[in-house]
Amino acid sequence: MAGGMTPGGRETLAQRTQTTREREAARRYGHGTSDFHGTPPAPWADALTDATPADHPPPVKHCWYDGPRGRQPALLLGWRNTGGHYDGRIAVAAPEPDGWAIVEMWVSQGMLSPA
Image 1 (cartoon, rainbow, N blue to C red):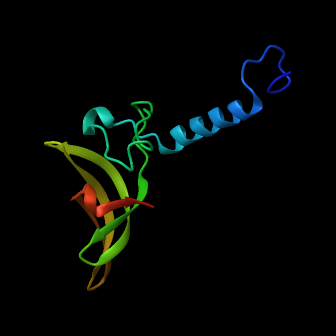
Image 2: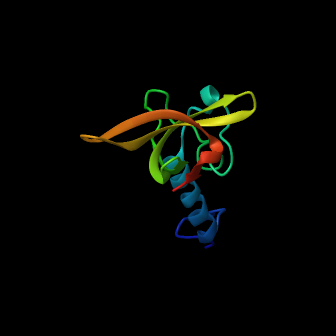
């Protein structure tokens, strides 16, 4: 029996493993707001194109933000297409005199990279 215990199965075990990995990646990295934001730019495109149910907010993604303070960890909250150029909406920690603040802003796709 090719692929497992079910007689007449069409996929090999290797094919089923690959399919399961693809489904898990889609579930983990699925974004579901591409209709609103447009298609995200590479290298994010493969990770963020699968839809999630509309009643669930899109999951945030860890990313790196290359800003004026150097490379900082950030959370990617969404994408927007501005005339063929993509901007990412991020949340990043910024130092203040009394501690830290969370800043939310739109930045150019060139300032972001996957974590």
